[in-house]
Image (cartoon, rainbow, N blue to C red; front, side, top):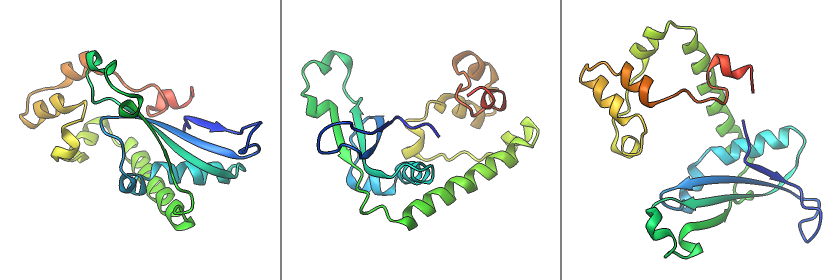
Length: 175
């Protein structure tokens, strides 16, 4: 887990508090319901509290990406940025526990899958094929190729690279 920002103000009304702040680059700002369904902040709050930091407030900073660069200068700050309080009062222990349980289950499944040979990973993986997911997926083109039985290895190797923050076994030892 990598937090974006954990702050302990030294002055002002929040002096001595612990603030958890996450940054999102998003096409549209989250609605309150989106935030209630999103498990990331409950996982962060639970983990930070478990490690001895009593989170008092949490915020989501959203940077809107929907506007082309030539229009950004014509937009107000309110069009481009929004800070939303997460609402720790609504984030009860059950919400935190359920978010962490789901994460642990997913992590266990990933670890089990890593034990399989690579060719079985592809056999076991099922594409979502849902417009809500696929329309913004960076792997849309290779996925279309694979669905048509067109080899996508060259496209994947030439246009995509593995993330470098701990998802691959060789990276997890470095960071």
